[in-house]
Image (cartoon, rainbow, N blue to C red):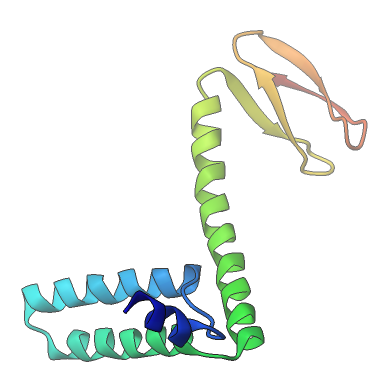
Length: 131
C-alpha cells in the first residue's frame, strides 16, 4: 500500500508551506463553522481544501513553486514585522532607540547616561538627546 502511494505521488508537487497554511485555515474555518453553524464558512473551507489538494497533486512544479515563493515572501514580511516589534520592546528596557534627524537611521544608546551627543554612523551627523 505504501509503495502504491509513493508511485502515485511521483512527479507531483506535494505539500509545501502554502498548502500546510491553507490546510490550517480550512480547519479553523471548519471549527468556526461548527460552532456558529454557518454554511458559508463550511463552503469556504471545502473550497480551500479542494484548492490545497489540487496544489499538492499538481504536476506543474514551476507554477506551484512560484505560488509558494510568493507566500513565503508575504510570510517573511509579516513575521519580520512582529519579530522586529518584539525585539524593540525587549531592548527598550536597557536602551533608547533614536532616529537620526537627517537620514532616519535607527541608533541604539544606553539608558540613564543623561544628555549625550549621538553620532550617526551612516551620515556622520551629530545630535544631542537625553538617554
